[in-house]
Image: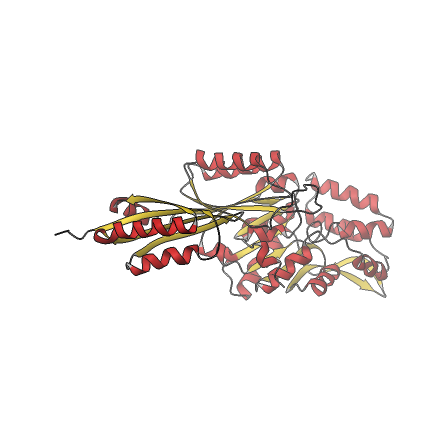
Length: 408
């Protein structure tokens, strides 16, 4: 009399995809009351790759495999069976949920060389790729497509030998090969981001508003000189801010209105804000610029919060003074924490995006800090960076797919 014994079998199916394959094969498993311990499926250019890990009684396993073979032949797909030991399965279960990372590659186009270099570093760190998915739409054959985007996301398991060195290597590769990369630990907070804060000048807009105002006031060169002194570290942000604002004395407020109407909006802002609002994110502008322009963007795109510097206006002209506390780097980080507290959001669920040195405090405070087309010092100190595409690249670092982004 045959003795009943538990068997674990890994089933791999591949071939031309068409409707009904998974249904037909799982129906056979159901008839024999086989348990499905794991299942995964991918489709690349109509080519199916389906994996099933089943448990079944040894008395019926032969019949199951025979029927699956016949059905696979009928469906014109290939099928392979691999026995799995109890110990192998228990070891696999023991690794479940531990030390998983999401590594995202992003650019106008991605090449085999970029992917080879990144995956070589993953392997060198003793980590294994569990899954790969494309987040962007299918790429056209013509490479010269303006504003094209390509994004691939790797789900990686393991503990890197040196996470800091791995991050540094990724940033080096990104700079050398002209693509962007993000490495995030795959935690509950990564999947549940809720608040995103943006710098304004040179992030949401492609200009520095104070430079625009200075040019209209005829003091463009003087303001530029002060800015350069601040960048060299000769004066701090607050001191440079006071000096630059003082030079705007007497400028008519109508100039601000004209500049606001003609602000050069950064590529991807409209698309990004549409998706973030649909997904329920709270959004904020935290700027060392001016509230007048921040409020214009708030009205145009639907931001929830604006904190910036308010210029004093008397009789329709700028006085060369400002009201309230200067929004510098320290203040931006404080405001991020404050808004998170008001919205009852864990700081790990926050995102900050900016380009300048005064954005570094909020980038390091947020759960995810992204340097956007940033100065070298900022990129060197940020863990995530976007330099190759527009601001909607942020959506891919958050795991959004084009299939969701383009839904009406």
